[in-house]
Image 1 (cartoon, rainbow, N blue to C red):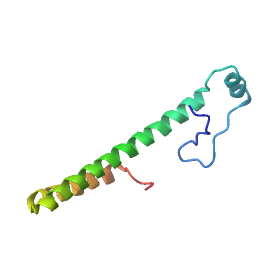
Image 2: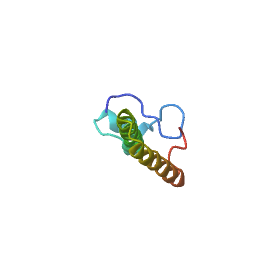
Image 3: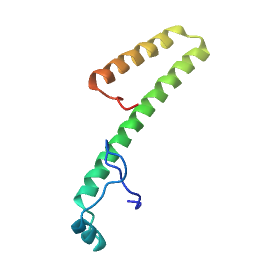
Image 4: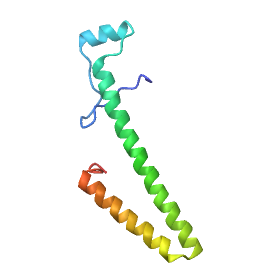
Length: 97
C-alpha cells in the first residue's frame, strides 16, 4: 500500500482507525479494516477497468467496420452494446457514473 488514505466506498473522506489499530500498525501489522477497505476499493477499480476495456472493444470494432464501410458488423456491435447496457442496468451496474 502506498500510504495514501483509503476512502471507504460510499463514505466521504479518508477512514479513521482506532487507537488499537494505530498501535498495531505502528508495530507493522495492517489493520483488518484497512484490508477490507482496500479490497472494496480494488474490486471497484477492477470493475471500472473491465467496463473501460469493454467500451474500448466496442468502439474499436465499430470504427474498424465503419472504416471498411461494412454496415452489418456495425449493426452487430450496436446490438451488442444495447444488450450489454441492458444487462448492466438489470444488474444495477454503473449507478454512480
